[in-house]
Structure formats: structure tokens, C-alpha cells
Length: 405
Ligand SMILES: Cc1cc2nc3c(=O)[nH]c(=O)nc-3n(C[C@H](O)[C@H](O)[C@H](O)COP(=O)(O)OP(=O)(O)OC[C@H]3O[C@@H](n4cnc5c(N)ncnc54)[C@H](O)[C@@H]3O)c2cc1C
Image (cartoon, rainbow, N blue to C red):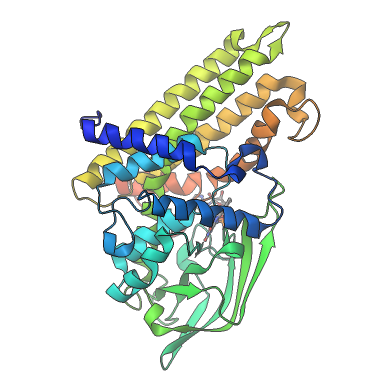
């Protein structure tokens, strides 16, 4: 692959950078990252910015215009996502599932009516989505899903519980994995519903994380009537569509994280120039210099791995199990990076943002705590290694538990 942009693509990139400078809403100030008065304010900020992207012809770059996209190629999509990630890496972004999962899976597996109904509204910011896969007894082993959907005339009646559902408290719709057949094998009895979160019988209960935010939720379904035309794919195809959804999530992760982490390393270097160790800038500390060099190398590996996945998509392929390599490449290095940053701060690392003497407004304290979830969300590191072993390297199957994440 030739990594250089063509002159048109470079002009497009510069145009987007210039547009972004003028269009980042004021309340996207990173120092407000934790300080939205309410979660509805966070949602309003998201809607406002997504609408600006859509009005500026920067939403859904490689999706057809009839679905609210721009009809360009995946290269323009990558340029927009990388630029956004590099500029906004300090922000909370509730649209990650909406754009990383809902859009590609509805576009790939949806009926024409479903594409028309949802995609334009997602691209113009009207709709936010969440992903309801995990349950108390179905995390890594998602095929164990027990939330039940029983067909009754032209509806499914849904009963059960999901957990860790990110942004369910602000979402309009949910990608819901359900069991429609209790008689057949674990994998075959699953189906995939597009569920309106305002339906009667849905109870969303936010859960507070170690960061103090409540990004994810428990979601309870009590006789929720979901119209049959909200079935994605065929009944019984839920497992394949769930796997496809997760693979899309992983490709987006590589592209976005590579660009964001380069900026994070710059931020860490700026901090190490200011913070003193034995009277000298921490940047002169050989151990810290080694950590920065290590982090930089890991980011380059992630970046080129992401480009390889993109190159595959450019040639018409769909994301494959090698996306698990990317997941490991962004999650584990991020934990090392944030630990190194706190190490540089020494005793000041205990001071959170907003307090006197906090360094870089507590960015690294927050990021350190948030990074703990990186090796769990989107599938744990152990599960990624199982996938790489079995599906990429062709090693014998893990017989202890069935797993896809
Ligand atoms: C920040 C965050 C956001 C999330 N957002 C969402 C969301 O929006 N929607 C959603 O559906 N879920 C979400 N999740 C849930 C996430 O997908 C699950 O937590 C994850 O898949 C692990 O499942 P579990 O927690 O049930 O752990 P378990 O599956 O019970 O695993 C427990 C431990 O056992 C290990 N393990 C399990 N099976 C195997 C095996 N076969 N081989 C080796 N080791 C194994 C795991 O690696 C882990 O260390 C989120 C999680 C986090 C942390």
C-alpha cells in the first residue's frame, strides 16, 4: 500500500482541519470533560456537533448520499476519523457505538426500509445508539445470551436483562442480541433486534465507574413489544451478525486510537518538560525516555496495523479476526502509557483534576482509571488471544468455553 495521500485527498484533509478549527463547539473544551451538568447536556453537545459535521458534508463519508452519507471512499472516512481523534482525544464521545457499530451493521445487514429509517438520522445526529450484548451470565461467552424474545403476531415480546450497556441512558435505539429459540444450539437460537429505547417496559439504570462517571448501565426488559420488522437479518442469524458487529468495532478502534495516542504521547512529553525530577525536567530521566520511546513504537505498530485493515477494506474485503490484534495493540499499551505518565508525576499523581496542584488538569489521573476498562471492553485480552490463536494462527480450539469476543 502507498501510504501517501493524493493531492485531492491532502486538500480534503486540510479543508477538514480548517473546518474543524471553526466548528468545534465551545463546550467541547477538554477541561469540561467531566463537568457536563447532566448526561442530557453531554447528549446535546454530541447532537450539536454531529449535526455540524452533517451540515458541513463530513458525516458518514463513505456511505451513499441517500442514507445521509457523502458518497466518498473509505479513505476520506479514515481522514475524518483520524483528524477527529487527534483533535478530540481528550473528550468523552457518546457516538462511538452509534458510528462504529450501528451504522456499518445496519448498512451491511439491514433491509432497505431499515437503512432508510435509521442511517440518515444517525448521520445527522438525530439518533444515538447503544449495544446490548452483555448479560450477567453472558459476557465473553455471549452465545449464552438468555434475554428472551418470543414472537407473538407482528411483535416480539422481550424479557430479560443486559449489563454494561454503554450510553444506554442517552441512547434512542439499542442493538439488542436476544434468544428467539430455546430449543436449538446456543449459537443458532440467537436473533438481533433494533430496539427503540422509549418503548414501555424498558428500565435503564446507570452504573458508576471507577472514574466517577456513569457511562454504562443495567437495562431491564419487561414484556417489551418490539415490532417484527425491527429484526436485523433473519431469525436465528443473531450470532453471525453479532460477530460482524464486533469486527467492525475493532477496525474503527485501530484507526481512531492510533491517531489519538500519537497526540497523547505529545501531551506526555509536554508534561515531562514541565515536571521536575531531582531539580531537572523529567524528560531527562532515562527510564522515562525509554518508556516514551516504547510507547511511540507501540503506537506506530498500531497505526500501520490499522492501515493494513483499511487497505484490505479498500480492496473490497470485510474486517476479519485479525482485528483482535488491533484490539490488543490499543488496549494494553494505553494502560502502560497512563501508568508511565503517573509515574512521572510522582507524588503529584495523587491529585485529581480540579484540585490545586493538579497537573494537566488531572487528565492522566482520569485516563489511568478509565484505561482499566480497556482490556475488558470490546472483548477481554484473553478472548482476543484465543481468537488470534484459533482463527488467525489456526491453533487447536479452546474447548473450555465457547467464545467470540
Ligand atoms: C468500559 C466498558 C464498556 C462496555 N460496554 C459494553 C456495551 O456497550 N455493550 C455490551 O454489550 N457490553 C459492554 N461491555 C461489557 C464487555 O463486553 C464484557 O465485560 C466483556 O466481554 C467480558 O465479559 P464479562 O465482564 O462477563 O467477563 P467474563 O466473561 O465473566 O470473564 C471473566 C474473566 O474470565 C476470562 N475468560 C472468560 N472466558 C475465557 C476463555 N474462554 N479463555 C480465557 N479466559 C476467559 C476473561 O478474560 C475475564 O478475565 C463493556 C465493558 C466495559 C469494561
